[in-house]
Image 1 (cartoon, each protein chain N blue to C red):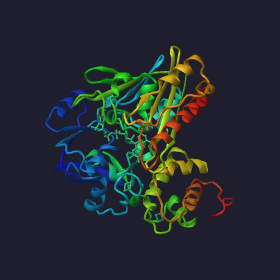
Image 2 (tube, rainbow over the protein chains, first blue to last red):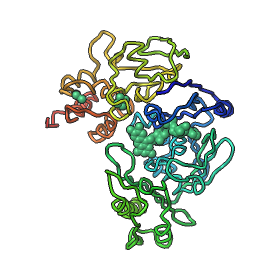
Image 3 (cartoon, chains in turn red, brown):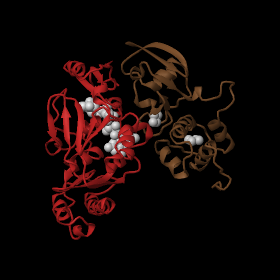
Image 4 (spheres, each protein chain N blue to C red):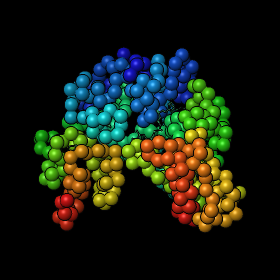
Amino acid sequence: MYSFEIESPTSVADAVAALGKEEAQALGGGQTLIPSLKARLAAPSVLVSLKNIDEIKGVSVDGGTITIGGGTTHATVAAEVGGAYPALADLAVNIGDPAVRNRGTIGGSLANNDPSACYPAAALASGATIVTNTREIAADDYFEGMFTTALEEGEIVTAVRFPVPEAAAYIKFEQPASRFALVGVFVAKYADGVRVAVTGASEDGVFRWSEAETALTSKFSADALDGLSLSGDGMISDLHGSGDYRAHLIAVLTKRAVKAAA
Amino acid sequence: MTKVTMTVNGKAVSKEVSGNTLMTEFLRDELHLTGTHVGCDTSQCGACVIHVDGKSVKACTMFAAEAEGASVATIEGMANADGSLSVIQQAFQDHHGLQCGFCTPGMVMTAAALLKENPKPSEHEVRDYLEGNICRCTGYHNIVKAILAASGQDVSGIAAE
Ligand SMILES: Cc1cc2nc3c(=O)[nH]c(=O)nc-3n(C[C@H](O)[C@H](O)[C@H](O)COP(=O)(O)OP(=O)(O)OC[C@H]3O[C@@H](n4cnc5c(N)ncnc54)[C@H](O)[C@@H]3O)c2cc1C
Ligand code: FES
Ligand code: FES
């Protein structure tokens, strides 16, 4: 690793100020950033650890909305949202392993927007709102392709607001070595329609499968998806699976998600 | 360099560290606690699992500076006060839960975290919880058996494979 200093502010305001320094970068749980620092893929001069900022941690439920602080660990989400939004708790409890879940955070996952990460699928399928220190961003406007988001330099994800669906499920086809999703599909049914978000598959990162959404909005049943398929063009192709294989998995997993949710 | 202060296995320690000093480096090179192993250094294998404020974490994927003020437990603190093996360690010995022993510190620390959360786990729950701990020798069977035995459950019916 290159050398850097670590600062640990206790408020969002202090963290924003610290991030204003040249080559400063936020440190969430470090579960993605530390491996990339080891590989010298990043060379910050200062890491601003968010872990002592209590105001961005924790889960609260208010009517039909769950608000999760950006610094909340996967383990806390798994333990605390189960009553209000079981599919989201189920997603969190299947990220990595217990030690990763004890440190990795939802804000870090959404800021990183790994094309195979789980939370982007939940946020997009739920029509969540990503709250930062300066503004609120709708999930539909937030994800801008692999490892790219609408976040500006130094902007901190302080919270994520999820509208609670009537029914939902996330099905992850696990890539057994990395434990990320080879393909993951999140289906969420709301009063005004069904949303389907797919991770792990597209070269453009997480996306909504609109044909499936239309079919499922008129009939929320796995057989509504009969005959629907996606092309393998533009899908990730690597040693774990071809683009065609991933496209096929999306259709299979979407049906499974609908069955699990219904 | 910044000064960090924490308790490690109940003892207060204070040292100067660089920002990029990993917890594994701090424990092994500064405190000479070499029981915390480094298998992969990429957060895959779990040989480096320690407890920070009671929660299992991979010490290779955490900076020492992040443990400021924390209570840290490593494998060196697992034995009973009189030096005899703890229940989990004894169960690993009794049920042949280790061969080369490289993964064992991480396995024991992960097992301790599991049994604190879930004192009577099922075999499935044990296997699931060990997802981030890799063993190249045992085939896991006897590790799972040792952890079930340490939880006080009868493992006589579980055949050694
Ligand atoms: C073995 C292993 C298995 C994993 N399996 C999965 C999996 O199955 N599914 C999955 O989704 N993920 C998986 N992950 C990734 C894990 O979820 C990470 O925790 C997550 O992607 C990053 O969160 P973090 O808090 O650790 O962020 P960090 O690693 O600290 O940071 C990642 C990036 O986000 C930025 N950042 C961090 N927090 C914020 C914030 N609040 N606001 C703005 N920017 C921020 C950082 O500057 C950095 O660029 C796995 C990781 C490991 C090591
Ligand atoms: S050395 Fe930390 S997980 Fe392998
Ligand atoms: S006993 Fe050798 S790696 Fe597990």
